[in-house]
Length: 175
Image 1 (tube, rainbow, N blue to C red):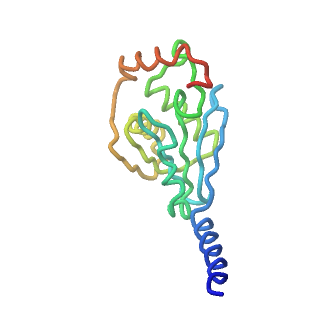
Image 2: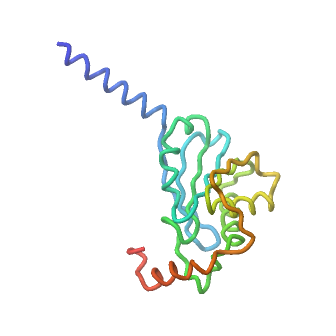
Image 3: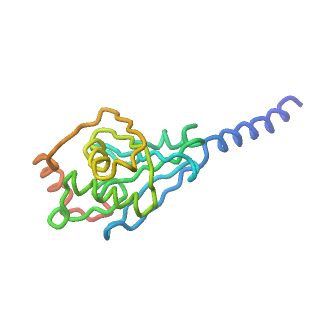
């Protein structure tokens, strides 16, 4: 008899945990002829936190945060930059992989989603991308959260040549 009463309690606990943390949505939006993949959680009418990832990473690094209790209070958005994660991987011969350009794409991403105000959460390469976004539109940035971020004036270093050469001849499904 005791065992049977534990099952409904377990189901209620699991349902409460799922409701508390909400759901993470996986979406893609077209920005500047690129597919920009992003993860989204939390109430759309809550304060927005834009989670800018580092290198060599993607929005996947923020999955635990998107599934946390933070999503019950904040609108969380974690995009993949072009050439990262599930976003388009444009050819480096036709796409400038510079922080200026990545920031422009991310700025256009926020405009495509009609984000007027947000907090920037910047990790590693998220720093040079987010700082450029903040300089371009300081009126949109409510706050900055900086986690081990860098701040470069120039684009991506020559070390990227190794990464580009490794992936340039691979089909997209292998990348």
